[in-house]
Image 1: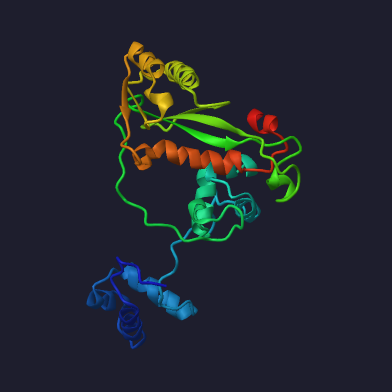
Image 2: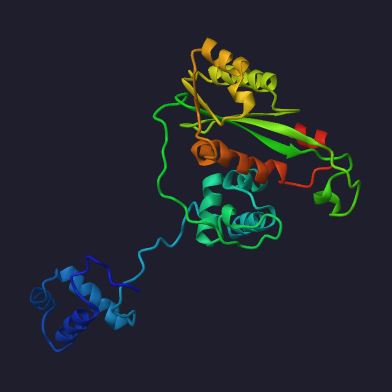
Length: 286
């Protein structure tokens, strides 16, 4: 154990103090010579005579009133390994608060979800993470919008439920997951829709604006990529009528809309591939 940083005596100094007292020097005089109080000298003399030693004791409390029970910690760790959930997902699955789940995962040195292969569960290599980040000053200042194509699940389940090579070899088509994320608060709004045509994109944007307005957010800007649904007159007319400025990312620069791209990954991990769905309707209802 390391020595307490505020200790006046080193272990060697404590031995000297005890030796002088045992040689016949008074406790008060020995304390004065060593530059400590009489109470401190008496404490080390008492510990030496009782066989407790002259090392610092741990200052950790004997009891921690709010210590997480070992069985709860094991439950969180098992859920993390088997379900690969975020702290919020672990909280819902185990009943343990999300912040406690995050501390348990960190304390056990478990890898982050971004470092885990979702199929095999093995830790994989990842690219460097930039420390540079940005965040708007207030909610509603910027809303990130994107669409993600999602393969439909045939009735009875797809290959995640049945295994590859089982069921119909023909695909079931794709749906489009439209997502909006507030840059400051990360509050998200999403809908699973049949396509990404201009009318569909505009209708989704209108509902998203009403959703944020219901939360008291006055949307100022919307950022999208350069997809045809977002460049249409219908989409831009809706934003103009609402007094919202439309900004675009540069071509082939998805990282500029990184917050919604990250939300897409979270949705894929915890909803799209979060379990083996047995039908498209079951997943849509979730």
